[in-house]
Length: 103
Image 1 (cartoon, rainbow, N blue to C red):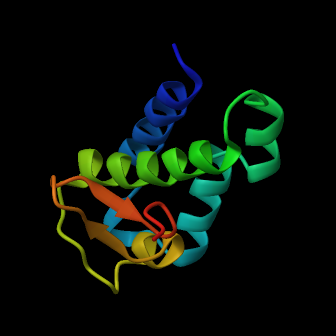
Image 2 (cartoon, rainbow, N blue to C red; image 1 turned 90 degrees about the horizontal axis):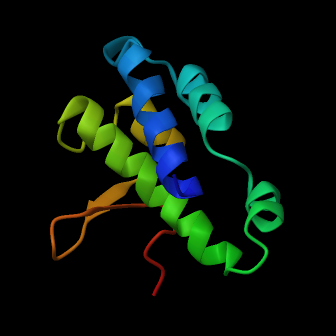
Image 3 (cartoon, helix red, strand yellow; image 1 turned 135 degrees about the vertical axis):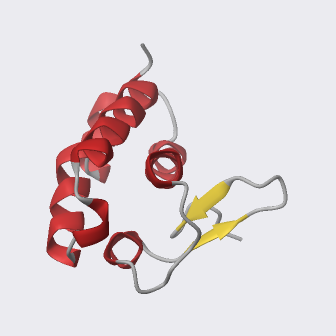
C-alpha cells in the first residue's frame, strides 16, 4: 500500500475511534501528530518526490479522513477544524485544508 494511502487509512481509523463531538483542540492536535508525519519525516520517507507536494497530500488526506469519518459540514468552531486550519471545498467538491491549495 502506498505511503499516503496507509496514512489515510490510519487517520480514518483514528478518527473513527475518537469522540469527535467532544474532541478538544489539544486532543485534535495530538491525534494529528500521531497520525501524520512531520515535514522532515516526509522528506526522509519520500526523497525522490517533492516533499511539499506530499505534505499537501497529507493535508488533503486529513480533510478527506474528517469528511469520511463524520460527513459533517464545515464548522469554524469545531476543534478539529481549528487544529488543522480552515477547510475549503474546491470546484470538484474535494476538500482542501490549510496550505494544500496554494496560489
